[in-house]
Length: 432
Image (cartoon, rainbow, N blue to C red; front, side, top):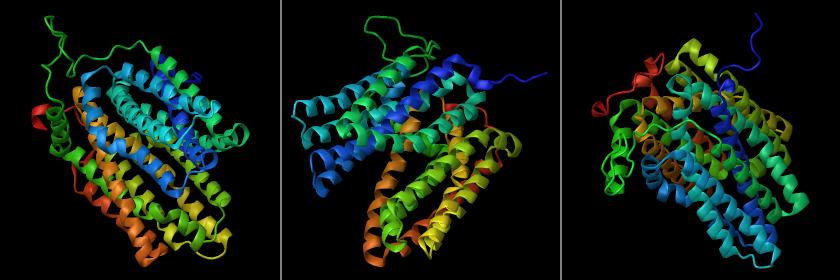
């Protein structure tokens, strides 16, 4: 019998709406990340210090407000939050070309837009990761995350290129208008979802009215944040994942801090060349997302995670070892990027495992706690990488970052993750 062309979640209309909204949102975010700094540089002739402040405005909210976003996501329904985040980003980004059209655009407005859009990015990302289990169920988490990440990989490959073309044709402020429209489309797609969310979180009880099913009395936000942190650090699997992620982000960003300088100064590569090299990574990540579900069924969750992460980390040794003529160096870097699919396989399993073992009412806070831990490690890694690059040179700094990634494997190997064949049953919260 001929198999149907579309199977699994491709036949789930509610998932397709979430997939469309999240994919369009990711594409829009990539355009913003590319075009907004170019507005500052090309349109406003911003100084390096001002461009640096713009980058800080894009990064800081995730660290400062991420935990609060997790508490809000667990208090409120997630789909309306995602729609609100999309519409808010559309309005904020639409203000840039509007101000430009009336010759009123200034660097202070870009700071404000970058700051507020970053807050909404955090709110959307925490909401969608927490919302997915409501749409697909625990048995289809790996399939759902792999499909979402496959689309993200395509967006990563195409997004930067299209953003560059739009900036070239329309100028940077008008390219951001296109970005704003993508968020409107995303909000419309999400608004079509009809799957009800389970009322199992800290929903606010209306004054004088009956408590909704599963609702709890309102509690202080800080107490709820602390509860989310206790869940992460009190569960051996979540704790291992958080430690591994923090270790990887710290050491990866030690060499990311000097990577562009290393590619241009030490290896002598042109920007167009390493742009093509990075595109290899996007294609590999797409392939990895397509095959991760099949690999996990064959080898199990634990072996797939450890094996894929080991291969991914090992491949990064091509970066500090790259040498010789630009063609040879670029080939070694492209070889490293060709293994990005293994890193994608690990990430999909990591997110799916987190979703599977976290009580639904805690998903927002747990995902936010994981995100903030990673972003703090990222910031620290960037600072250390900048200092080391100045002190000991570019190639030694890259080598230290790559070697340090090996420590992430320790957290997984000496944890229950190593022996997991499938996702474990959802634990009782009292046991966490």
